[in-house]
Length: 262
Length: 84
Image (cartoon, rainbow over all chains, first blue to last red):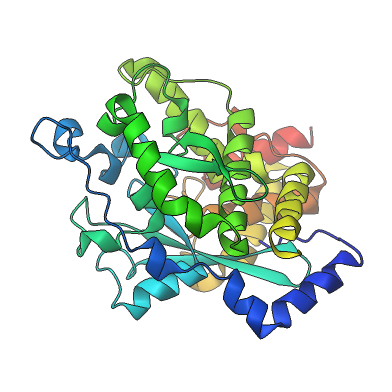
């Protein structure tokens, strides 16, 4: 789906930025640095966090109750991250089952996003090479337009709607500690990096519009409530309803221009 | 527009988006494009937009049950209702 937004003369400025090789290097995320940590989380009780939740983050969330969207986790990543993973040998069960879509936030600027269907069920190896979206789970950094981390949003899209408890042990019991770690590692990599700023600002916008479209929350232990919620959730995601509107496209275009056109 | 005419438009749109190669030679009413794996989210949205564009109506997908969603029958029902 090409998301064309007319920006008049400003697109010419963007084109210049794109073609400058020095700027080109600066604008790309340093994935090697991003991947240079391995956040292994302990429950603090002598066991790894995933043993407290039966590996909730890596299992299909309510997979058997979803009718439209993939039961297997689908991990989005920018082309530069996908290429980085391939350059270090790929990640079996992740980089071997991908689809991609090209978006055009502003005229002439293409952003390819890869969607990797993960079949690892938590056993991806080497585990430290799990995609960025998995590394930061269960929180997603919310940054301002300059790239400063302002706070955190609960990940994933579905997790944002839990009414009471989150099945993730880290989200429930270790949120401050985990957020501090993510902040310490990522903040220097975000500041001054246009691609990273655009990525995080775009995801912030995506989640904001999702929340607007789906105002309900769900009590996951309540089966009837959960099924009704999941049906509504997956239809909106499948139909891309929150994001098929002019306001969303304009916001994404604006984030893109803000991140790159400096 | 008769039900048969609605069906004809729907099938034509499906063929345009999916392509003949991935479709069965006879497309039955209960054929589910999503379950059959011939459309993903992006193609499904394109299909809905194409039908809406061709017929000048808005398909009210929220009115379909989970069983009808993604089927040829579901599309026919919505199209017939939309042009009533």
